[in-house]
Image (cartoon, rainbow over all chains, first blue to last red):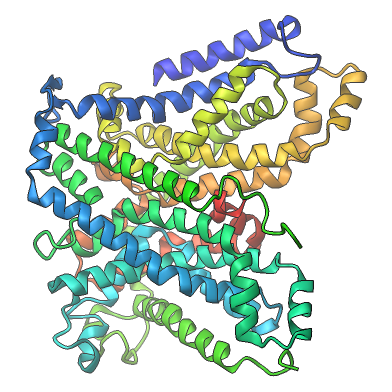
Length: 314
Length: 273
């Protein structure tokens, strides 16, 4: 921290001293010194920790004293750890279910909200409210609303059976997917709304002349025009899904048993409950690699990096 | 012909979703004005016997006033750091002809892909080593750092739209880099700057993981931690708990009512680009 402020201050000084005669910079062009304070700060508090997580994954450390080098111990322990394998699988399940539920829902809501009718604008403003709450607040709210003894399930036994959704794996996973959907659908809806409004009107006019109905227009014009947004939105969902943590901690504590212990929550437990920071770092690194890889593959597979505009050929 | 017919199916669907969104919000709001006994007796959906403000008052007495203040401190500092560091950086990325700034930009793009969960263990280590454990500064610094990549992306996007003619005109007038920055770039980046302020403020206000791991004592508790601890310690006092949830969202709700556009942009972050 002291180093950060010190080097930030250094950055200020060099900027002032060097600016007028900086070689290579044209007149009125900012030199590197303008970027340095932010770069140093970000490096120190985001990139150094990222490198450190790789280093720590090869050490033994219980939070006190100094980490000791442990070679591949943590990694080989993880490979043999059934809870770890299960947690990766659960992360995947949560992510896939999240995408599968949220994508169609937010496409429909987004296209619907793209209409300029007054009632749609009013309803959209209400739909937006869950996004204003923090993930913590949303999880706390749903934990209370779904409480087996004092919540809605206790009052609506015809719908919820014995009422304890958190007692079985399917129920607990369902709650996690549902709560994430409840909170983040507005975000993706906004993305799709923006994209749907950008679809050129001529396409719909042409389709109408050809006699295409609402459903055909949706599948043959709107949906193909949204493909860039589908990629953006899905990447956000995948990264968010793989790193789901707050909802698990507050809603299910990874239970029943380890039935909703996904990798992010497992990492937290390893670190701050079992004080096994080395193994936790290995899990964290695995998580970064998987999330990064998935995003990269999706960008490549979809051709998103080559796809500049959906308007080609219009 | 089909255009004139109202879309009944969509109308029905939109009402179903209104119910899903609205029911828990309604339950929450009503519950906060009910006594614990009333809530337990009549259930979340039942009609309350009479209404009270005690839940809010008790929460504020039980420390939430303090947590509010702490969260406000964290938020102001995070926004301050971001506003101090990111605009000069974005300016350099957009206008510098050096290679180094390009590399810095790519590092920030990489940063977009780093989830905060991934660095929480080393962050705990670093903050401990720096002697900042259980100190609000220890929460402020990483929160600001993790808000930066999106802010960089938003601001560079806005600054790229400033035409080079404007820069050239000022350069011909003999304006220094600093003057161009202050008199041309900043005023023309206002929309981006408001997005950046809202985005980083939301990150700070709603931040949970860093405070969870990096603070401990109740005098350094932020509001999200207040909610979490309330739930784990007195989870049965649902009206009190939900009143705390409502308290935590009031500032954001006010921004939503009065600066909706900036808030939406800020919430969308990169997604909106």
